[in-house]
Image (cartoon, rainbow, N blue to C red; front, top):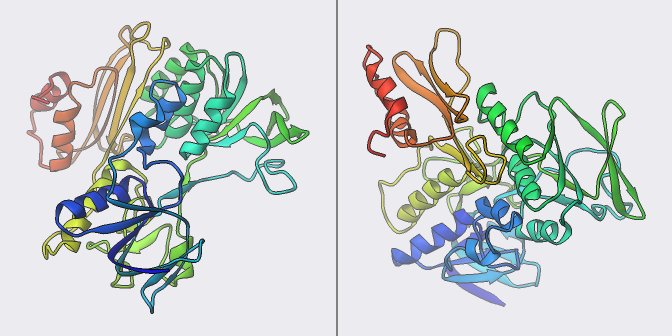
Length: 411
């Protein structure tokens, strides 16, 4: 079968679906090809499904228009077609790669069975299938080891603990969420998890997964200590899915290389979202994916001025459960943006309330706000983010900065 569609989008995640919906609004139809059986969903909220707070239906994305479920196996750039696993061929005028990213599977001994499958009880945490598999396996008292203490690992550990599992979180680096948080904020997150009963180990490397009869039984640390485990969650980060692009001869670095028009080295192929590398950077976050999708929709619909020049994105996370420093059942909110670790010569303003479990910090360089982190009450985050995104010089007396830290600034 051969069909003809002006714009074909490979990938039914947030970036691909948002692009298709916006194109439809602008009168430019698109066909989306997605390789998951589930209705497109907001991946950011998978931890809430695992925690039992949301059903899969709640995090479903609005329909993108024309959605074809299937797996694309190749791109014929000369003929401007894509081949699918079922033998069908789809023609395009413009092809958009929104293939997202895959979970990183660490090089651990015993991680795979002889058939190169994960043992029973070992799960990645990236897709709806991963989430539903974990949800089915978790029960009160089950022993779960989460490998990785970044955003994914912290979210997974919290969700499993809320479900009653006995959770151990193993983080190789010296603190949790080190890419987003400074030591003080990371300590508050650790305090929250430990309040939920999570056993947190930092500077701890897992080297071995041990299975019996194809089912996981324990993990072994680098120092030889073994932890019993009924479940192992691999939350070691993600890697852009660039296989199709590479096989098609497109320029690939960490992601598919794109310019300000989200164009690859082939003028008929664009890329957005987790798989795209713009100006040397792969974001892997929702906000940049949405901005890229919006800019590309304008371009493909005929705007000659739309451009994507980068995103200054803010990371937010809400941790729920009785372990909050603010009190039983009060969520712990956190936000981080820009550079949270100061350089020599930077000015740092910090406000902390140990009793309330709140923490606010901003980093100023050459009279400009370059980063900040807030834990607890986030009333000021809107005003701080606007000052950071604007990159305007701050008044030299410091008063307005303190005002931003202590007032919501109308956010």
